Image 1: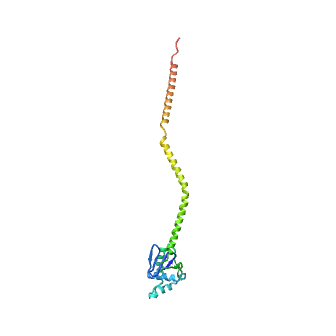
Image 2 (image 1 turned 45 degrees about the vertical axis):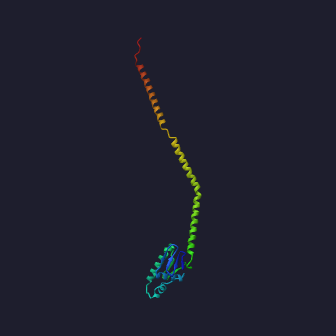
Length: 204
């Protein structure tokens, strides 16, 4: 069994690619191509070598197009596990190579240990972020408490001490009456004065 890019296991006997969550079974030609690249790890494997090993050895004659199609299938299958990283490198006009591969025992726990380490790192990071956010909470809680207290006091004041709008109206009405009375008194004085002036002089 082989561990590719520390993310996916390859079992040659079954052609299975797998990780802790999923698996894909490769076809015969894709399995043979991948195994050849693993055997030549770090070396460029030409198309002619691949055709000879995977097809011609079994009496099958194919063109270079068969190699390209098979490599496309391999890359697509590996991308399912490697999250976008290209495991197989194309060397223009020369061939293909693979690097990050290690042979491991069938009961290997490298991938599970790798997952555990990632989980621990993720949890530690989350705990650190939570602790930093939590350090600001006392201030935020204090501000919120003060705001709510002020709001409740304002509502209570408005409820128990309503604004008396009737009193100013009464005062204004009284002032109007006083003005009317003052005006009436003034008019009466003027009228009496005019009446007195209109009286004929006494004849002696």
